[in-house]
Image (cartoon, rainbow, N blue to C red; front, side):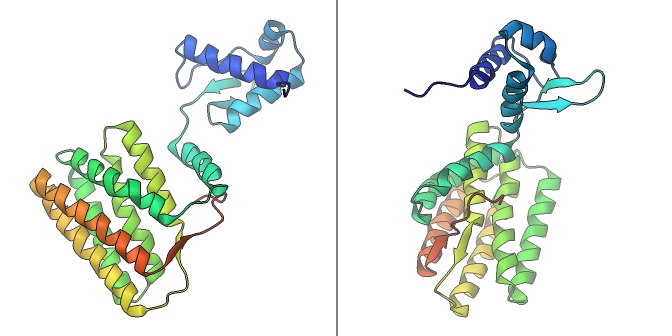
Length: 244
């Protein structure tokens, strides 16, 4: 049985401490000297434990005379990157992503009906306009990236944090899809045009606050996108360790 490092034990106890004391962003942990006395260990061990929590995104080390370990909320970007690192070592197929995406994207779309404001609508329209311009210029790379950003904008208005995280993660994975082996301009053009048409339909239904229309449009959109990915022979970029 592998012996757990002392710094890892201290880090785990500090996590429990944060939870037990209900500490939140901007709250401080005791300074290093107090932690050394409390745990009866060296400065190096305490610093290693704090560094582990900082890497996780749970702490930020503030400099200066009044500095020290300060609690911060773990960012979504940090969590998504950790999930990417996990899936880098899995045998992942785009079908695995779309098995979930076909359900979760519909749930997000239904969730945000009535929650989107004028700023969201303006950005969604600008996103569609960018896709149209990319299609005219046969800029497939820009088109594929911007198409996913449309779904990221929808996520911003979602009030279910678990659903939000999962969809943002799946969107990040979709950005890692690269088109290989197939260079058919006709297929790529049809894919881009489908995304434009589907997003126009979704935006109109969202503005009408038409929940049934939104659900039907997003469901059909996800099934069609999965079909295009299959016909284009999509596969995952192997480097999921890099930030998407």
